[in-house]
Image 1: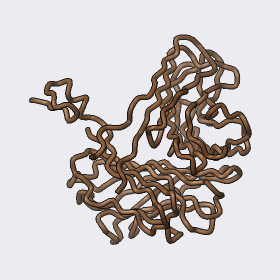
Image 2: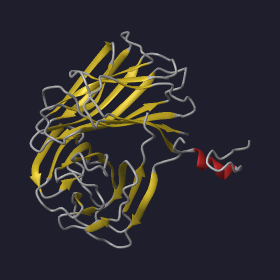
Image 3: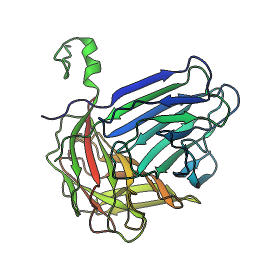
Image 4: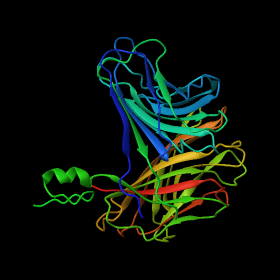
Length: 170
Length: 188
């Protein structure tokens, strides 16, 4: 039987108060990809959004980024990091929200390292795309820990996690 | 005007929300090396299509891109633009009147074990016979010390409804085992 609608909401969280961390856990392994949608502002100081998968804080993360700030395009990279990164050129600030869409591809397989492809932007800051690699011995992603390096996400910031199921084999 | 829910069969204005969703059509998961992935007999009842892939090929380098053709058309009907970052600089590329469209990123054989490139590709208004077809994609790979992330757009200068999509490595000759290509329809 052909599969019907996908892009199912797994969890949706709207912050009732400022916080610098958020955990999305107990992620079921029943989908093919995950999509994380964030609309966030800072409670005071500008910051960036980092993540860890399955509580892994070892140096298993790396990322490559391309973006533009309205005058200059650029690209950056960091390797062997203890966390992944979703924002680089377009920070989370007070006022206008930063929008992030991150795709965790084939998140439940135990064959490949996990690659996260994301795009984000903020008016008056910039627009960018980032690819992250998680190099821990392949395992299914069951939790996503989002955090800043100190400053907080403001109350009202939203975080939605969706599951996307692939179609039947050809 | 009566609206009927595709999901439940219920009628009413609120049923309109039921008719805007993403539906998995088919997935190709490679169990062996494959030169071309083909989606054929694509249903025409959606508004847009999306392809999500995790891919690697036999190109003896870290990565390259794929090429796409529609409805077996290999005439000079394709154009594309790209901006790509490699960790140190952002570069833009473009080409017109090509026999295929460059799209996405595919990890090569030197990308490292277990590293696959990913692509999310949107094909807008694919069944509309009054418009040339527009494609956009977000793609990337990282191998801890090297990598690329790219935004592409492309156009097929043909107003025909898309019924078939062929995806092949641009430089390599075969996609590798465990590569996965998934096609989705988006109703609207």
